[in-house]
Length: 255
Image (cartoon, rainbow, N blue to C red; front, side, top):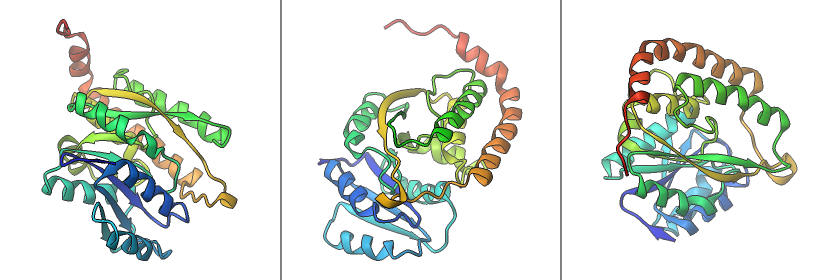
């Protein structure tokens, strides 16, 4: 377990199911501190987390009174982390899909390139729903278009390390980015601010209901949300296009 006073793990959680316990334990085995933001859960998971917290000083639990969405929960955690002096946050889901074993490698990449966002590039296995794998190709294409191919390999995989200050700035400048649109819009807006992307492979596992898996993804609602997000961002992309082109054509310093 690696302690840090600059980098922490943030885990937003809403009715996560039985995988929460192992997810938090696995994250704590890799890193300290780990903060869980309980986003209005009603499944008894807060009580479980409070019991874990009492036995583990490296675990902190933040509680939201009502469910506001993944982005809203993370914004609360990011603001509190910034007040506590942290500069970077690794975000991961609470349902066991994301690879806790990759935390140290992603944090090391962030320390080597602190100005960058370290983005997980998912490595799918047979558990991945085919429709989800195919559907994200459209989202990835739209993100690459609106960032002028800035190097984002996957726009939806939420296992990432962000520099906290620019992420809070883009979130506070938008009324959106509070629900499922958070991951995709964050990388677009950070790219517009000149935050470079570093991509690292990371395995992802989809658990069935029989295995204790829980999914709050709604194909109709969340795909409509993503589609409207990309349409909305296109106007911002068009306004920034001259700047993005100039930035892309600017000579890079020799190493």
